[in-house]
Image (cartoon, rainbow over all chains, first blue to last red; front, top):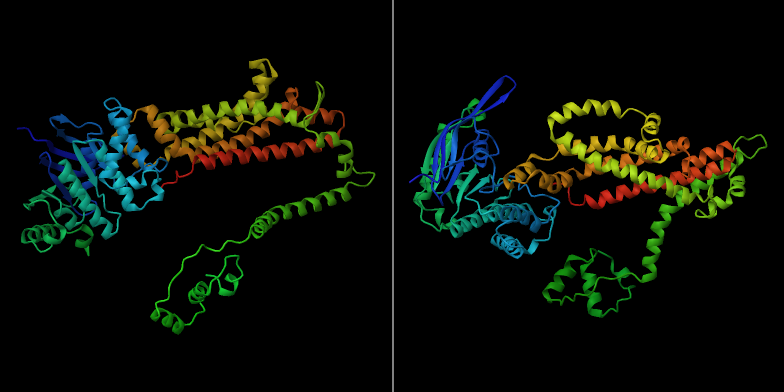
Length: 266
Length: 320
């Protein structure tokens, strides 16, 4: 069987004038359908670049990314992105932000009424129907990120790409939203790739954790399988030995073997 | 929080109970009193927030208007007085306000009279000039936003066009007039062209800056959604660059109004610009002063209109 998503020996260099910097070297990764994969590493290790490569927003230097045996060459709604800073269009209401995506993706396949229902259904998934007529500036950061997730889900993507989606949120909102995303993943069974720099955020929802070495020329240092049953409950797991072992090995990777460059210098 | 003695004056009928609660709510209430009330489980009664009587509210509104209107009126009166004194002597070269009122009363009182083909009210003349401005400025807005979008979006268009724009925009409006008269062979389209060519530069330049400043996030969203060029233009570019575009439009309408008066002086017709030239040639200085006031007020209104539309149109576009 061919893998669902294959990142095949991908490298990425940025050229500025005559100088080229290699950001990612020889990334090789296969991701199964329906799995939840986290990519963790220190800041500056190129994990966001890797996500942009999968999204097609950044062109690949060498290697290839195959989604269901189709080469990824450009961005598209089959790889929906939830951006770090929500990226809602501030002149559109919450409803119109999601509707824009729905109209674009299902403009030919769904009727007007169906598109409205589908928009509302996705807003309901993230519990944002009550604020559908508000502008993004009128809702909280957590709510904006919910709408961002609804917009991405509404595209019915093959892969949902989350780029540090909870980075800008306070700890409580963050935990709440992580639980929501886990529930949605359990309910819809979609494939999720999430960038994070938070250990708990990586371990809690993931089937696999991809740990990146430090850049430049970052690559995959280690891949950890998290063999915990679902549904996972935050409180119960906090003392679960498997969870704690996974957490410990990620911490060891990040803070013993691959400390942040700035910390090494200190 | 209001103090209790003010509250008891309100129209709201007061029970002993509610008055008691208000006193407890006031900052002056002592801690022991509050503690005593808590131990007694004082009943809290909610009642409508006190509303000032109608006359009082009207008075407040009137006061705020008063504060806005009175200072400029005082300054205006002072200026008129100084003017009257300065040009009141027999050797003065300019007419004082009293003479202007006597000479040009018909122009001031009725802006829309029609006594003949060249003897019409200044309001009608302003309308003629405004028609030309609307045509020229409207065309400049459409062409300017499209060209600005092109220059802002494409590096090659910017490299090719921007130097040309930078040179052309320094050409004074009236310098375009002879060549446009030669091209159009008619006064009216020439005047409109002068407006167009005057107003278009700030619109192009501001639109281009606005487009260049579209956040990468919005471009990414558009890329993931695969918006086509037309959808990107309408759904992302225009709303995102709207604050910049309206800055350009506002500068453009101001320049248009500057240019039309000068252009009409040369092309003739029934516009307000030609009226001033005509009055000068027949030594009607009072009429000129009245026309200047008209031009100033109309220019002010135009500026405020574009600013107002911009304010409405860009509501909520500020990213957070």
